[in-house]
Length: 198
Image 1: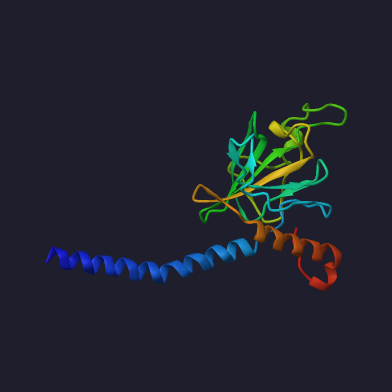
Image 2: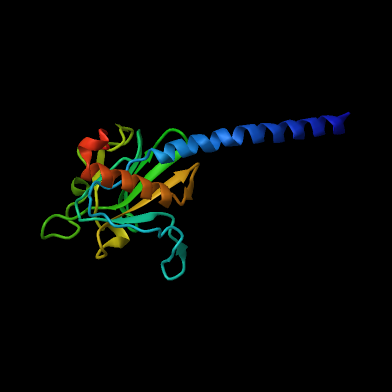
């Protein structure tokens, strides 16, 4: 009897997993396909550097570096709540947004400079006005500014952009590329598209 119940339970679990999984994937695709490009600068440059070996072979890069002019606005990729606003020696100033569906976006190496003085800007130059821990943000809202804080000091200004699901980082390059293409089309043909990305 116990053996029979085990087979029934396993069968039910497999069937439930098969039915539930496509819905879960569709939900994820819907979220990722609608994200906004994280930097509001048409001159941004990026490539698929997720998974590159960094730190003299000691770590794997779990994000995408988006290069842009220092001080370019960094925007929320989707609606959510500010989960983290912080500073560390390696990350510099950074911010994370909880999108309340298992997804979290992370923006690292925000600007800490003021004209003529490297690293003296601090939080005032890193984060946008009105951004605070627990605050709600909407897709396209400015949350901070591109820089080179932390261990990026002296490199080309960029934002290390990362997307995590349930705490694990994922390569979302294709979705970022699509969001860039939508942004680029909007900048070039705003009236024809009839949409507002920011």
